[in-house]
Image (tube, rainbow, N blue to C red; front, side, top):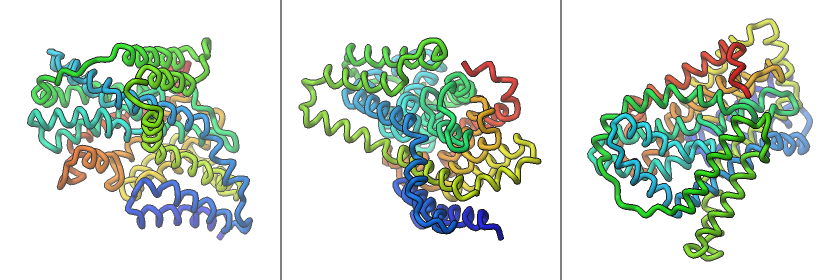
Length: 426
């Protein structure tokens, strides 16, 4: 057996064992991915190659800074009460479809900015979920709505961690930058958002009839509106107007929010709020960085080279679709770490020739895995955040399957017809 195959089996084996032993507990995912990278280095006979293990995460640094700064901003806005005040206004909408659409977008908002579903679940998801349950919605329906909104938010721009992971695979040593995904991600998520709004409209309209009268801070609202405008400019016109990236806008906005609300928080309390915000994103960011080590070691040891040799005679689209399917199957049992590796490998064959439409399509499978995973995924997080006990995983999937199916279907379309849709990349 070739040494590269042994190395690959060792690395994937350590990852699989880690998922099984920890029962897909996300806080351990980064640790056993890093352990897999070290094990692969040993299996190749090179000892611990600190250079590759440390160098790999640098491919995700820019993206990680954007995720962290967005997490701080959205968590601070949540803690000021702005999100609750916005929800109270949404509750007054009289049109059933518009109300459902607005509630889903409200749930999605923190995940849109941060790129991961977790912050939506514990902030806007908790707010909307509490109102739904109070209004008589069943636990399964409530969890399905919050899970769907959080998943849609994770896919929508500006940040999408599954797309960040997939885009890293488009290079060999240097990753493809996470740039130009704004319109492809909107196209990827929009059908699911529209269909989910119609699917849940009756429940949302009947359960959320009125909201509490929460005071709306105009300065905080202006900051949020300004950040959304800057994000829109960055996403749509970055080829012409570069404003320093999302991390700069998010960081500046966070500082302004802290200044505006200086009477609410003492310096020590403000530091605690920022720290709590960073704790919310540490898991997803650590997973990205550890995945960087895994990918770099697999390149160093020849695993990716052998993989490239094998797939050269094959159809690139077929390889991508096969690895997307494998991600879904493995992700159901073992969570996101191995599917994250497969997403990077799915994009790897086309290298620098990849366009962002195709990369976003591949990322759809990884996003859906976060909902599909029977342990440690979105479903479990939603039930924990809403204090729902005794609700089976399949009961939530019955409510949110359409959202996931449409995201995945659009992803497949983007992989198959991505070259024809390249006009979406600005």
